[in-house]
Image (cartoon, rainbow, N blue to C red):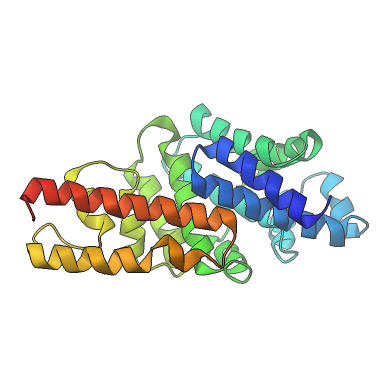
Length: 258
């Protein structure tokens, strides 16, 4: 299987796994990353080690991060969010399980899901995991990963304060600005204040400040600026641009802005 085919399949199935464009892009990245990893490690001892008995600590998985095993890193972050409120819910587990089943072959998805159950029993240094991701993923893509983590948190319908804190901590390790984090978080809430957060302003902002913030955000996230990137990244950018438009139209109507 070529990298292109793996990325394409990951992107298409990622969309159906998470019902959103950021899921499609994340699927594309996982598919592409896995193809590269599989190509370079299929005959190596590190790949064979995956079939051995699990270790009693987290060192087995931590060592895989040095091999740019993005899937393992994603599982570790997923586990951190799920464990944040002290309970592992079936809806959250199903969310992750479905995602990996959509991205990989039955054999590999079974392996990763088995790994995930073991990972849930262990503790990891999140800063180290995020550092590994930072070294191989641009910040724009890390922002999409934060959206995926929010998807896990909201799988049961509610994002708890403890889950929010863990995702915020991961976001800071990803070097994502507080303003951008608030903008991403607002995509999962439909209260009035969330529309202001999408534009990166306070509810006390004047009408002129709102117009200025909208123009700035519209220019920054306009789909035309992403023409040189992949198709799924363009879709994700378009989704963000639509959220900005929606937020501005809502505020305009609420304030009767001309």
